[in-house]
Image 1 (cartoon, rainbow, N blue to C red):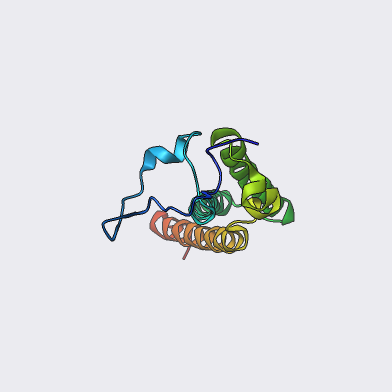
Image 2 (tube, rainbow, N blue to C red; image 1 turned 45 degrees about the vertical axis):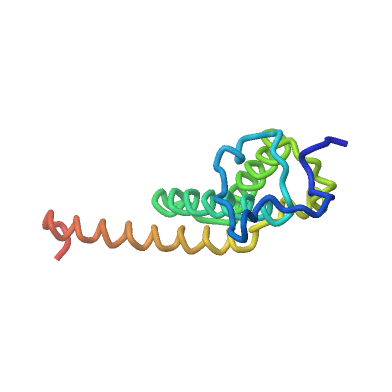
Length: 141
């Protein structure tokens, strides 16, 4: 079992200092020696997955890529990034956080929704942009 990277068992929280929340340190995001509690790691994994969903959704919508295979590819990319982050970069003991299943589903359903909305919206915006260009160039009356 990897020590120093799992849930704190002594009950002390380092988030409080004189009754105030301490600022989150971004250096912790890439520190394999940092200790994480379940909520902190879950929040980080959730927001990483949302960023991936937004980026992939915009790219998929602008290209435009349609069909179930592209949704499956998004899920594979997103889950691969999440797994790589907690297993390779942070080197956390996944059993302390509920196993791979619990960590891999953090933010999953919200990211699918964001991916689909970003994909549809960017496709609609691209269509409107192209129609505007056609009007300006005089090809569409």
